[in-house]
Amino acid sequence: MPSPLSAARLLPASRPAWLSPKVARTEVLSGLVVALALIPEAISFSIIAGVDPGVGLFASFTMAVVIAVVGGRPAMISAATGAIALVVAPLVREHGLAYLIAAVILGGLIQIALGALGVAKLMRFVPRSVMVGFVNALAILIFMAQVPELLDVPWVVYPLVAGGLALMVFFPRITTVVPAPLVSIAILTAITLGAGLAVPTVGDRGALPSALPGFGLPQVPFTLDTLSLVAPYALALALVGLMESLMTAKLVDDLTDTHSNKTRESIGQGIANIVTGLFGGMGGCAMIGQTMINVKNGARTRLSTFTASVFLMILCIVFGPWVSQIPMAALVAVMILVSFATFDWHSIAPATLRRMPYGETIVMTVTVAVVVVTHNLAIGVVVGSITAMVIFARRVAHLAEVTAVAGPDRTRAVYTVTGELFFASSNDLVYQFDYVGDPDEIVIDLSDAHIWDASSVAALDAVTTKYAARGKTVTVIGLNEPSARLHGTLAGQLSGGH
Image (cartoon, rainbow, N blue to C red; front, top):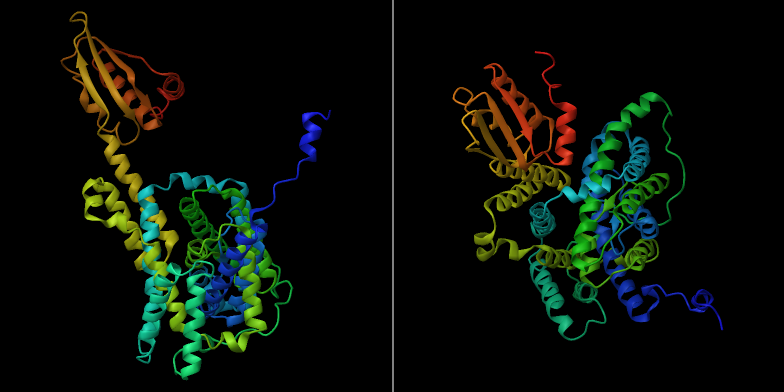
Protein backbone atom coordinates (compact mmCIF):
# COMPACT_ATOMS: atom_id res chain seq x y z
CA MET A 1 0.00 0.00 0.00
CA PRO A 2 1.58 3.35 -0.97
CA SER A 3 2.38 5.81 1.77
CA PRO A 4 0.36 9.04 2.04
CA LEU A 5 3.39 10.95 0.74
CA SER A 6 3.83 8.76 -2.34
CA ALA A 7 0.08 8.83 -2.95
CA ALA A 8 0.17 12.63 -2.86
CA ARG A 9 2.90 12.59 -5.45
CA LEU A 10 0.69 10.55 -7.75
CA LEU A 11 -2.17 13.06 -7.55
CA PRO A 12 -2.38 15.47 -10.50
CA ALA A 13 -1.22 18.99 -9.71
CA SER A 14 -3.98 21.59 -9.59
CA ARG A 15 -4.31 23.32 -12.95
CA PRO A 16 -4.06 27.09 -13.27
CA ALA A 17 -7.50 28.69 -13.40
CA TRP A 18 -6.89 30.17 -16.84
CA LEU A 19 -6.66 26.69 -18.41
CA SER A 20 -10.40 26.36 -17.97
CA PRO A 21 -12.03 27.14 -21.37
CA LYS A 22 -14.66 29.37 -19.76
CA VAL A 23 -12.09 31.35 -17.77
CA ALA A 24 -9.71 31.56 -20.74
CA ARG A 25 -12.47 32.98 -22.96
CA THR A 26 -13.26 35.68 -20.41
CA GLU A 27 -9.57 36.52 -19.95
CA VAL A 28 -8.76 36.67 -23.67
CA LEU A 29 -11.78 38.76 -24.62
CA SER A 30 -11.16 41.13 -21.72
CA GLY A 31 -7.54 41.44 -22.83
CA LEU A 32 -8.73 42.43 -26.32
CA VAL A 33 -10.97 45.18 -24.92
CA VAL A 34 -8.11 46.47 -22.77
CA ALA A 35 -5.74 46.47 -25.76
CA LEU A 36 -8.19 48.53 -27.82
CA ALA A 37 -8.53 51.04 -24.97
CA LEU A 38 -4.76 51.15 -24.44
CA ILE A 39 -3.94 52.41 -27.93
CA PRO A 40 -5.36 55.97 -27.75
CA GLU A 41 -4.30 56.30 -24.09
CA ALA A 42 -0.70 55.32 -24.83
CA ILE A 43 -0.58 57.70 -27.78
CA SER A 44 -1.94 60.54 -25.61
CA PHE A 45 0.63 59.89 -22.89
CA SER A 46 3.39 59.84 -25.50
CA ILE A 47 2.32 63.31 -26.59
CA ILE A 48 2.35 64.51 -22.96
CA ALA A 49 5.86 63.11 -22.49
CA GLY A 50 7.05 64.67 -25.74
CA VAL A 51 7.97 61.43 -27.54
CA ASP A 52 6.73 59.59 -30.63
CA PRO A 53 3.52 57.52 -30.22
CA GLY A 54 5.50 54.32 -30.73
CA VAL A 55 7.51 54.99 -27.55
CA GLY A 56 4.35 54.95 -25.43
CA LEU A 57 2.88 51.95 -27.27
CA PHE A 58 6.12 49.98 -26.90
CA ALA A 59 6.16 50.83 -23.18
CA SER A 60 2.58 49.58 -22.80
CA PHE A 61 3.48 46.34 -24.57
CA THR A 62 6.64 45.56 -22.62
CA MET A 63 5.24 46.69 -19.24
CA ALA A 64 2.14 44.50 -19.61
CA VAL A 65 3.89 41.40 -20.93
CA VAL A 66 6.60 41.49 -18.24
CA ILE A 67 4.30 42.32 -15.31
CA ALA A 68 2.01 39.46 -16.38
CA VAL A 69 4.86 37.11 -15.47
CA VAL A 70 6.68 38.78 -12.57
CA GLY A 71 3.95 40.95 -11.00
CA GLY A 72 2.24 40.22 -7.70
CA ARG A 73 -1.33 41.25 -8.59
CA PRO A 74 -3.06 39.07 -11.24
CA ALA A 75 -5.42 40.87 -13.65
CA MET A 76 -3.78 44.26 -13.07
CA ILE A 77 -2.70 46.14 -16.19
CA SER A 78 0.60 48.01 -16.25
CA ALA A 79 1.45 50.29 -19.16
CA ALA A 80 2.51 53.82 -20.03
CA THR A 81 0.61 56.24 -17.78
CA GLY A 82 -0.09 59.95 -17.53
CA ALA A 83 1.59 60.24 -14.13
CA ILE A 84 4.87 58.88 -15.49
CA ALA A 85 4.55 61.04 -18.62
CA LEU A 86 4.24 64.16 -16.47
CA VAL A 87 7.32 63.19 -14.45
CA VAL A 88 9.59 62.57 -17.43
CA ALA A 89 8.34 65.30 -19.79
CA PRO A 90 10.84 67.98 -18.57
CA LEU A 91 13.75 65.53 -19.01
CA VAL A 92 12.71 64.73 -22.59
CA ARG A 93 12.17 68.40 -23.40
CA GLU A 94 15.60 69.47 -22.14
CA HIS A 95 17.81 66.46 -22.89
CA GLY A 96 16.08 64.10 -25.33
CA LEU A 97 14.81 60.53 -25.52
CA ALA A 98 18.12 58.80 -24.67
CA TYR A 99 18.20 60.36 -21.21
CA LEU A 100 14.56 59.40 -20.68
CA ILE A 101 15.43 55.77 -21.35
CA ALA A 102 18.34 55.97 -18.91
CA ALA A 103 16.01 57.41 -16.25
CA VAL A 104 13.48 54.60 -16.85
CA ILE A 105 16.14 51.92 -16.36
CA LEU A 106 17.51 53.60 -13.23
CA GLY A 107 13.95 54.08 -11.93
CA GLY A 108 13.38 50.36 -12.35
CA LEU A 109 16.52 49.58 -10.33
CA ILE A 110 15.31 51.92 -7.57
CA GLN A 111 11.91 50.20 -7.52
CA ILE A 112 13.55 46.81 -7.13
CA ALA A 113 15.61 48.15 -4.20
CA LEU A 114 12.56 49.75 -2.57
CA GLY A 115 10.57 46.56 -3.03
CA ALA A 116 13.34 44.47 -1.45
CA LEU A 117 13.47 46.92 1.48
CA GLY A 118 9.76 46.36 2.15
CA VAL A 119 8.27 49.65 0.95
CA ALA A 120 5.03 47.78 0.19
CA LYS A 121 4.43 47.40 3.94
CA LEU A 122 3.81 51.15 4.12
CA MET A 123 0.43 50.49 2.47
CA ARG A 124 -0.94 49.45 5.85
CA PHE A 125 -0.68 53.09 6.93
CA VAL A 126 -3.06 54.27 4.21
CA PRO A 127 -6.45 54.81 5.93
CA ARG A 128 -9.72 53.65 4.42
CA SER A 129 -10.91 57.25 3.98
CA VAL A 130 -7.83 57.94 1.81
CA MET A 131 -8.55 54.79 -0.19
CA VAL A 132 -12.15 55.92 -0.79
CA GLY A 133 -10.89 59.37 -1.82
CA PHE A 134 -8.36 57.72 -4.13
CA VAL A 135 -11.09 55.68 -5.84
CA ASN A 136 -13.45 58.65 -6.23
CA ALA A 137 -10.67 60.91 -7.52
CA LEU A 138 -9.66 58.21 -9.98
CA ALA A 139 -13.22 58.06 -11.30
CA ILE A 140 -13.32 61.84 -11.67
CA LEU A 141 -9.96 61.91 -13.51
CA ILE A 142 -11.07 59.16 -15.88
CA PHE A 143 -14.21 61.15 -16.71
CA MET A 144 -12.31 64.45 -17.02
CA ALA A 145 -9.90 62.82 -19.47
CA GLN A 146 -12.86 62.13 -21.77
CA VAL A 147 -14.19 65.70 -21.76
CA PRO A 148 -11.71 67.02 -24.41
CA GLU A 149 -12.95 64.25 -26.72
CA LEU A 150 -16.46 65.74 -26.49
CA LEU A 151 -15.51 69.35 -27.25
CA ASP A 152 -15.37 70.90 -30.73
CA VAL A 153 -16.43 67.66 -32.41
CA PRO A 154 -19.14 66.90 -34.98
CA TRP A 155 -22.62 66.60 -33.45
CA VAL A 156 -22.87 62.95 -34.45
CA VAL A 157 -20.24 62.09 -31.83
CA TYR A 158 -22.77 62.65 -29.04
CA PRO A 159 -25.38 60.14 -30.23
CA LEU A 160 -22.54 57.68 -30.88
CA VAL A 161 -21.33 58.02 -27.27
CA ALA A 162 -24.91 57.73 -25.98
CA GLY A 163 -25.48 54.66 -28.14
CA GLY A 164 -22.26 53.09 -26.91
CA LEU A 165 -23.30 53.62 -23.29
CA ALA A 166 -26.74 52.14 -23.97
CA LEU A 167 -25.20 49.08 -25.60
CA MET A 168 -22.89 48.44 -22.63
CA VAL A 169 -25.75 48.86 -20.13
CA PHE A 170 -28.34 46.69 -21.87
CA PHE A 171 -26.29 44.11 -23.85
CA PRO A 172 -25.29 42.10 -20.71
CA ARG A 173 -29.02 41.38 -20.21
CA ILE A 174 -28.92 39.42 -23.47
CA THR A 175 -25.62 37.59 -22.91
CA THR A 176 -22.37 37.95 -20.99
CA VAL A 177 -20.39 35.57 -23.19
CA VAL A 178 -18.84 38.51 -25.07
CA PRO A 179 -17.82 41.64 -23.10
CA ALA A 180 -20.27 44.47 -23.72
CA PRO A 181 -17.48 47.05 -24.32
CA LEU A 182 -16.10 44.91 -27.16
CA VAL A 183 -19.57 44.67 -28.73
CA SER A 184 -20.02 48.43 -28.37
CA ILE A 185 -16.67 49.20 -30.03
CA ALA A 186 -17.40 46.79 -32.91
CA ILE A 187 -20.91 48.13 -33.57
CA LEU A 188 -19.96 51.82 -33.39
CA THR A 189 -17.01 51.22 -35.72
CA ALA A 190 -19.26 49.43 -38.21
CA ILE A 191 -21.79 52.28 -38.07
CA THR A 192 -19.21 55.02 -38.67
CA LEU A 193 -17.56 53.12 -41.54
CA GLY A 194 -20.82 52.02 -43.09
CA ALA A 195 -22.37 55.48 -42.92
CA GLY A 196 -19.15 57.26 -43.83
CA LEU A 197 -19.32 59.47 -40.76
CA ALA A 198 -16.52 62.01 -40.39
CA VAL A 199 -15.68 61.68 -36.69
CA PRO A 200 -12.39 61.63 -34.74
CA THR A 201 -10.73 58.22 -34.86
CA VAL A 202 -7.84 56.44 -33.15
CA GLY A 203 -5.68 57.17 -36.19
CA ASP A 204 -6.11 60.91 -35.61
CA ARG A 205 -4.13 60.55 -32.36
CA GLY A 206 -0.94 59.43 -34.08
CA ALA A 207 0.60 56.83 -36.35
CA LEU A 208 0.73 53.26 -35.06
CA PRO A 209 4.10 51.42 -35.16
CA SER A 210 4.68 48.90 -37.94
CA ALA A 211 7.45 46.79 -36.33
CA LEU A 212 8.45 45.41 -32.93
CA PRO A 213 10.75 47.50 -30.72
CA GLY A 214 14.49 46.97 -30.81
CA PHE A 215 16.73 46.07 -27.87
CA GLY A 216 19.64 48.25 -26.78
CA LEU A 217 21.28 50.39 -24.11
CA PRO A 218 20.55 54.12 -23.99
CA GLN A 219 22.98 56.20 -26.04
CA VAL A 220 24.21 58.42 -23.19
CA PRO A 221 27.63 58.89 -21.56
CA PHE A 222 27.94 56.54 -18.60
CA THR A 223 29.36 59.18 -16.25
CA LEU A 224 28.57 60.68 -12.86
CA ASP A 225 27.25 63.79 -14.60
CA THR A 226 24.68 61.67 -16.44
CA LEU A 227 23.78 59.90 -13.20
CA SER A 228 23.28 63.17 -11.34
CA LEU A 229 21.14 64.45 -14.21
CA VAL A 230 18.75 61.49 -14.50
CA ALA A 231 18.68 60.41 -10.82
CA PRO A 232 16.03 62.92 -9.63
CA TYR A 233 13.71 61.96 -12.48
CA ALA A 234 14.39 58.26 -11.90
CA LEU A 235 13.57 58.61 -8.19
CA ALA A 236 10.35 60.51 -8.93
CA LEU A 237 9.38 57.92 -11.54
CA ALA A 238 10.05 55.09 -9.08
CA LEU A 239 8.06 56.62 -6.23
CA VAL A 240 5.08 57.73 -8.32
CA GLY A 241 5.00 54.40 -10.15
CA LEU A 242 5.10 52.36 -6.96
CA MET A 243 2.49 54.51 -5.24
CA GLU A 244 0.00 54.19 -8.10
CA SER A 245 0.75 50.49 -8.60
CA LEU A 246 0.37 49.54 -4.93
CA MET A 247 -2.79 51.61 -4.53
CA THR A 248 -4.25 49.99 -7.64
CA ALA A 249 -3.26 46.53 -6.41
CA LYS A 250 -5.02 47.22 -3.09
CA LEU A 251 -8.09 48.43 -4.97
CA VAL A 252 -8.20 45.24 -7.07
CA ASP A 253 -7.72 43.19 -3.89
CA ASP A 254 -10.84 44.82 -2.46
CA LEU A 255 -12.87 44.44 -5.66
CA THR A 256 -12.02 40.76 -6.10
CA ASP A 257 -11.85 39.74 -2.41
CA THR A 258 -8.36 38.33 -2.96
CA HIS A 259 -4.91 39.06 -1.58
CA SER A 260 -1.85 39.93 -3.66
CA ASN A 261 1.87 40.00 -2.97
CA LYS A 262 2.72 43.71 -2.80
CA THR A 263 6.47 43.11 -2.38
CA ARG A 264 6.53 40.97 -5.51
CA GLU A 265 4.50 43.64 -7.30
CA SER A 266 7.00 46.35 -6.29
CA ILE A 267 9.96 44.33 -7.54
CA GLY A 268 8.00 43.31 -10.64
CA GLN A 269 7.32 46.95 -11.51
CA GLY A 270 11.06 47.58 -11.35
CA ILE A 271 11.86 44.63 -13.61
CA ALA A 272 9.18 45.72 -16.08
CA ASN A 273 10.56 49.26 -16.23
CA ILE A 274 14.11 48.01 -16.81
CA VAL A 275 12.94 45.80 -19.69
CA THR A 276 10.83 48.67 -21.04
CA GLY A 277 13.82 51.01 -20.99
CA LEU A 278 16.02 48.47 -22.76
CA PHE A 279 13.41 48.27 -25.53
CA GLY A 280 13.15 52.04 -25.87
CA GLY A 281 9.90 52.59 -23.96
CA MET A 282 8.97 55.56 -21.78
CA GLY A 283 8.32 53.53 -18.62
CA GLY A 284 5.07 53.08 -16.78
CA CYS A 285 3.16 51.62 -13.85
CA ALA A 286 -0.25 50.18 -13.06
CA MET A 287 -2.83 51.71 -15.37
CA ILE A 288 -5.89 52.26 -13.25
CA GLY A 289 -8.53 52.89 -15.92
CA GLN A 290 -7.56 49.84 -17.99
CA THR A 291 -7.30 47.72 -14.84
CA MET A 292 -10.86 48.69 -13.99
CA ILE A 293 -11.99 47.68 -17.49
CA ASN A 294 -10.24 44.34 -17.07
CA VAL A 295 -11.67 43.58 -13.62
CA LYS A 296 -15.19 44.79 -14.48
CA ASN A 297 -15.13 42.44 -17.50
CA GLY A 298 -14.54 39.52 -15.13
CA ALA A 299 -10.79 38.98 -15.65
CA ARG A 300 -8.99 37.55 -12.62
CA THR A 301 -5.74 35.97 -13.86
CA ARG A 302 -2.43 36.91 -15.47
CA LEU A 303 -3.67 35.66 -18.84
CA SER A 304 -5.75 38.81 -19.38
CA THR A 305 -2.72 41.04 -18.78
CA PHE A 306 -0.55 38.95 -21.09
CA THR A 307 -3.14 38.79 -23.88
CA ALA A 308 -3.73 42.55 -23.61
CA SER A 309 -0.04 43.13 -24.36
CA VAL A 310 0.01 40.64 -27.23
CA PHE A 311 -3.20 42.00 -28.75
CA LEU A 312 -1.80 45.52 -28.43
CA MET A 313 1.14 44.74 -30.69
CA ILE A 314 -0.95 42.64 -33.08
CA LEU A 315 -3.53 45.41 -33.40
CA CYS A 316 -0.81 48.00 -34.03
CA ILE A 317 1.44 46.06 -36.39
CA VAL A 318 -0.95 43.71 -38.21
CA PHE A 319 -4.30 45.47 -38.03
CA GLY A 320 -3.08 49.05 -37.71
CA PRO A 321 -5.06 50.42 -40.70
CA TRP A 322 -8.33 48.99 -39.35
CA VAL A 323 -7.69 49.89 -35.71
CA SER A 324 -6.94 53.45 -36.77
CA GLN A 325 -10.54 53.73 -37.99
CA ILE A 326 -12.13 52.96 -34.60
CA PRO A 327 -14.08 56.09 -33.60
CA MET A 328 -12.88 57.76 -30.42
CA ALA A 329 -16.55 57.98 -29.41
CA ALA A 330 -16.57 54.21 -28.83
CA LEU A 331 -13.59 54.35 -26.47
CA VAL A 332 -14.93 57.46 -24.74
CA ALA A 333 -18.16 55.61 -24.00
CA VAL A 334 -16.20 52.72 -22.48
CA MET A 335 -14.18 55.02 -20.23
CA ILE A 336 -17.26 57.01 -19.12
CA LEU A 337 -18.96 53.80 -18.02
CA VAL A 338 -15.77 52.73 -16.24
CA SER A 339 -15.61 56.04 -14.37
CA PHE A 340 -19.26 55.70 -13.31
CA ALA A 341 -18.72 52.13 -12.09
CA THR A 342 -15.48 53.06 -10.30
CA PHE A 343 -16.92 55.94 -8.23
CA ASP A 344 -17.98 54.91 -4.72
CA TRP A 345 -21.47 56.43 -4.75
CA HIS A 346 -22.24 55.01 -1.31
CA SER A 347 -19.48 57.17 0.18
CA ILE A 348 -21.33 60.41 -0.69
CA ALA A 349 -24.86 59.22 0.10
CA PRO A 350 -26.51 61.57 2.67
CA ALA A 351 -27.11 58.66 5.08
CA THR A 352 -23.43 57.69 4.92
CA LEU A 353 -22.22 61.26 5.44
CA ARG A 354 -24.48 61.64 8.50
CA ARG A 355 -23.04 58.52 10.13
CA MET A 356 -19.43 59.06 9.11
CA PRO A 357 -17.13 60.87 11.60
CA TYR A 358 -16.42 64.41 10.48
CA GLY A 359 -12.68 63.79 10.22
CA GLU A 360 -13.14 60.84 7.86
CA THR A 361 -15.16 62.98 5.46
CA ILE A 362 -12.51 65.72 5.57
CA VAL A 363 -9.75 63.23 4.71
CA MET A 364 -11.72 61.82 1.79
CA THR A 365 -12.52 65.31 0.48
CA VAL A 366 -8.92 66.50 0.79
CA THR A 367 -7.65 63.43 -1.06
CA VAL A 368 -10.11 63.95 -3.91
CA ALA A 369 -9.42 67.69 -4.14
CA VAL A 370 -5.63 67.33 -4.22
CA VAL A 371 -5.74 64.58 -6.85
CA VAL A 372 -8.14 66.49 -9.09
CA VAL A 373 -6.12 69.72 -8.83
CA THR A 374 -2.69 68.12 -9.33
CA HIS A 375 -3.81 65.27 -11.61
CA ASN A 376 -1.43 63.15 -9.55
CA LEU A 377 -2.84 60.25 -7.54
CA ALA A 378 0.39 59.76 -5.59
CA ILE A 379 0.41 63.35 -4.27
CA GLY A 380 -3.24 63.02 -3.27
CA VAL A 381 -2.59 59.82 -1.33
CA VAL A 382 0.37 61.34 0.52
CA VAL A 383 -1.52 64.54 1.43
CA GLY A 384 -4.62 62.56 2.40
CA SER A 385 -2.59 60.22 4.63
CA ILE A 386 -0.86 63.16 6.34
CA THR A 387 -4.24 64.82 6.91
CA ALA A 388 -5.58 61.60 8.43
CA MET A 389 -2.58 61.36 10.74
CA VAL A 390 -3.00 64.96 11.91
CA ILE A 391 -6.71 64.43 12.61
CA PHE A 392 -5.97 61.17 14.41
CA ALA A 393 -3.25 62.82 16.53
CA ARG A 394 -5.62 65.65 17.51
CA ARG A 395 -8.33 63.16 18.40
CA VAL A 396 -6.06 60.91 20.48
CA ALA A 397 -4.34 63.88 22.14
CA HIS A 398 -7.47 64.47 24.24
CA LEU A 399 -7.64 60.90 25.50
CA ALA A 400 -4.87 61.25 28.07
CA GLU A 401 -6.25 62.31 31.46
CA VAL A 402 -4.61 63.11 34.82
CA THR A 403 -6.74 62.59 37.92
CA ALA A 404 -5.76 63.47 41.50
CA VAL A 405 -6.56 60.65 43.94
CA ALA A 406 -6.65 61.12 47.70
CA GLY A 407 -3.54 59.62 49.29
CA PRO A 408 -3.53 57.48 52.44
CA ASP A 409 -2.53 60.54 54.42
CA ARG A 410 -1.71 64.18 53.86
CA THR A 411 1.99 63.45 53.35
CA ARG A 412 1.45 61.92 49.89
CA ALA A 413 -0.37 63.01 46.70
CA VAL A 414 -1.36 60.36 44.16
CA TYR A 415 -2.10 61.07 40.50
CA THR A 416 -3.43 58.49 38.02
CA VAL A 417 -2.69 58.98 34.33
CA THR A 418 -5.01 57.29 31.83
CA GLY A 419 -4.56 57.03 28.06
CA GLU A 420 -1.87 56.98 25.40
CA LEU A 421 1.11 59.27 26.00
CA PHE A 422 2.85 60.51 22.88
CA PHE A 423 4.06 63.84 21.50
CA ALA A 424 0.56 65.30 21.09
CA SER A 425 -1.17 64.05 24.24
CA SER A 426 1.78 64.65 26.58
CA ASN A 427 2.16 68.36 25.78
CA ASP A 428 -0.32 69.41 28.47
CA LEU A 429 0.86 66.83 31.01
CA VAL A 430 3.10 69.31 32.78
CA TYR A 431 0.19 71.61 33.65
CA GLN A 432 -1.98 68.97 35.32
CA PHE A 433 -0.15 68.93 38.68
CA ASP A 434 -0.34 71.18 41.77
CA TYR A 435 3.35 71.82 42.32
CA VAL A 436 2.82 74.35 45.09
CA GLY A 437 -0.03 72.78 47.05
CA ASP A 438 1.02 69.12 46.93
CA PRO A 439 2.83 67.47 49.91
CA ASP A 440 6.46 66.40 49.77
CA GLU A 441 5.82 62.96 48.29
CA ILE A 442 4.08 62.53 44.94
CA VAL A 443 3.14 59.24 43.25
CA ILE A 444 2.27 59.13 39.52
CA ASP A 445 0.42 55.91 38.66
CA LEU A 446 0.70 54.93 34.98
CA SER A 447 -1.06 51.55 35.29
CA ASP A 448 -3.71 52.67 32.79
CA ALA A 449 -1.35 54.54 30.45
CA HIS A 450 1.27 53.71 27.84
CA ILE A 451 4.42 55.68 26.98
CA TRP A 452 5.03 55.74 23.23
CA ASP A 453 7.84 58.22 22.63
CA ALA A 454 10.62 60.42 24.00
CA SER A 455 8.29 63.42 24.22
CA SER A 456 6.28 61.65 26.92
CA VAL A 457 9.43 60.75 28.87
CA ALA A 458 10.57 64.36 28.59
CA ALA A 459 7.19 65.54 29.93
CA LEU A 460 7.50 63.24 32.95
CA ASP A 461 11.06 64.52 33.48
CA ALA A 462 9.71 68.08 33.44
CA VAL A 463 7.11 67.20 36.09
CA THR A 464 9.81 65.58 38.25
CA THR A 465 12.10 68.60 37.84
CA LYS A 466 9.36 71.07 38.84
CA TYR A 467 8.62 69.12 42.00
CA ALA A 468 12.34 68.70 42.75
CA ALA A 469 12.82 72.48 42.53
CA ARG A 470 10.42 72.72 45.50
CA GLY A 471 12.13 69.96 47.47
CA LYS A 472 9.56 67.30 46.65
CA THR A 473 10.10 63.75 45.37
CA VAL A 474 8.22 61.97 42.58
CA THR A 475 7.76 58.21 42.19
CA VAL A 476 6.43 56.76 38.93
CA ILE A 477 4.67 53.41 39.31
CA GLY A 478 2.55 51.03 37.23
CA LEU A 479 4.61 51.13 34.06
CA ASN A 480 3.99 48.22 31.69
CA GLU A 481 7.07 46.48 30.32
CA PRO A 482 7.55 48.48 27.05
CA SER A 483 6.85 51.77 28.83
CA ALA A 484 9.24 50.89 31.69
CA ARG A 485 11.96 49.99 29.19
CA LEU A 486 11.60 53.27 27.28
CA HIS A 487 11.33 55.33 30.48
CA GLY A 488 14.30 53.61 32.06
CA THR A 489 16.45 54.25 28.98
CA LEU A 490 15.58 57.92 28.46
CA ALA A 491 14.56 59.33 31.85
CA GLY A 492 16.96 62.10 32.87
CA GLN A 493 18.83 61.89 29.56
CA LEU A 494 16.81 64.28 27.40
CA SER A 495 17.63 67.70 28.81
CA GLY A 496 21.18 67.78 27.53
CA GLY A 497 22.40 68.89 30.89
CA HIS A 498 20.47 72.20 30.81
